[in-house]
Image (cartoon, rainbow, N blue to C red; front, top):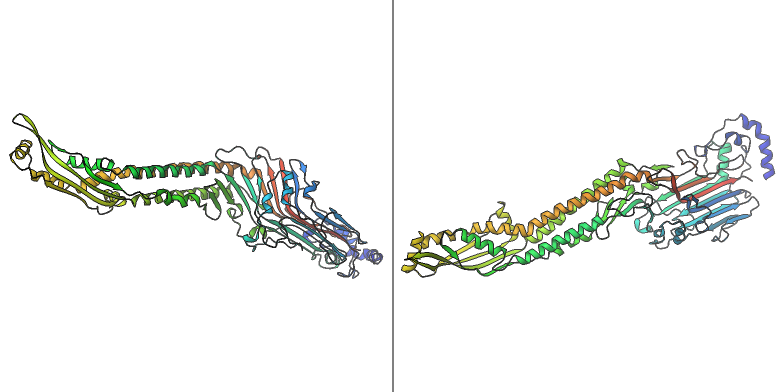
Length: 593
């Protein structure tokens, strides 16, 4: 049949020259005159029947260069490549590739790549080997298939044994393996309060399939559009991870304040404690000169709520808005770059060929706003949780004392007890504070005054010298409850509220420190990282230097697709440090018999 086709080529050459040449937009590198002087319109290509085609296909998970070293020759990273000659001879690279079995004249090979093999290039990509969905053929599969009928297929990444892409816009997260992380530490400047930044690469996959016979027929005597090639890809997500000691400092600041407040709650009580001292001061303020108080006796208790338990959930639960996640326990900051950049869920897997993921200040600055908002909200929650706990504490007062009067009577200093006093109060800390602030009705503080019964001439004489009477003393003290509350409230505020207010200021300062550090990262990141999705070298906008085999007078081009291309450079220079291709698949060239 090959001789017949070649004869028809020669016979149709003149007619082909006169015919208008049409080239597919996906095959811009093909020379039109090659086609018009090569194969011409003929029904001799019987797709699905003729098996003398030559075909090439390949699948490779990772390729590119790192620090000037070409990764293609690295044996541990070798993909799988099949070349079928017209006579059916098959060249398999590597020879150890697995043959899952296919009916002749089709040949299929698999070369699954273990994640540990990626350590040879110094990249921490082992995460791609964990968390595989049940029944998965492997996170790093590499697949190639060719047929004498002119078909070819390649696949790489999270693909099935049949080369099917398992990363789609609708794939649930539970069905995807864990992400890989590429360290950016050596490329970035030292940023105070930030540890090593890493780029997160979620599960990736690509597939290229070609019906070479249909492709050739369409380009020869169809409308000039390539109908036999289908390329697909999938990228689960792209993110950024870094860590900061500031997150730990936030937790430490909270714990320190909780400890202070908890201790203060325990020291407020007692007949000589701060509350009792304030009450004694208030009572003395109601007495005139010459009157004194005996030491207080009785009890002052303040219940001690578990402040640490009240705030504990806020110190362990990650802070997230669905785009940015701050893990206070580990200090890790995770950013879903795809969500931050405005990609809808699954949209990374449905972009046009050669889509540049734009990283610049305009799209990255919202990260700072999000982090600031998360920390502001969290700070408010922490402060409120502590205040709610301390406000729920109950103050119970039951104190007694004796009022004594002292004067000089007939030249002799004389002191007599004139009245007994009892102060009683039971109220939540919150009620006492609110009443002092004028935002609530004051709780009742009872002051009871009882004459001692010593009403003889001596008592009257002493009080008379002082210009006082028992009724005046009783009247002054019986109305002093509100005054006493006004003196207790500042004690509670100083011990329980001021530390929390100071904590709020401390947390705000630390939050600002973290945002400043992230701002430095955002500033340099665009000069260090470049990302491109759905890379197809034969389509407009492809990065320069991407390998590609164009079509010839007798063969289709190579249809190549890379799910994700990552470019890395040092912030001090635009020179390429690495460009890594994740999940590259090729189908073709395919040549007619």
